[in-house]
Length: 117
Image (cartoon, rainbow, N blue to C red; front, side):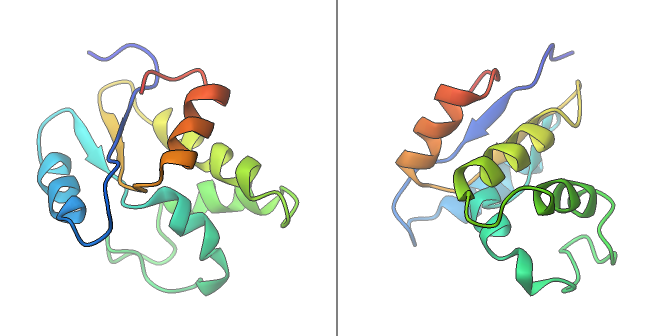
């Protein structure tokens, strides 16, 4: 069992196969893929599109996005941190995979969240 929140962060150039890597990893026992968390937070206004799980509202993302909605719209860093922190802490049995790809976002997560990246 995994103790404490852990996150696998995929960092790469766009169109380099990172989505495929994230999907392959997310299909493995002990790992759960969440796509590009930072981009999901940035595109929150696009709701209510169905989640890839097919449920609407999504039982995983909807509570996360509701929490992020409470934060100031102009503070993108805090909104991303809230989402990543919540998703990474969802399960003690699985490691979350974030394929946001962005080095500044990775640096932000490592500096401000107490999770193993």
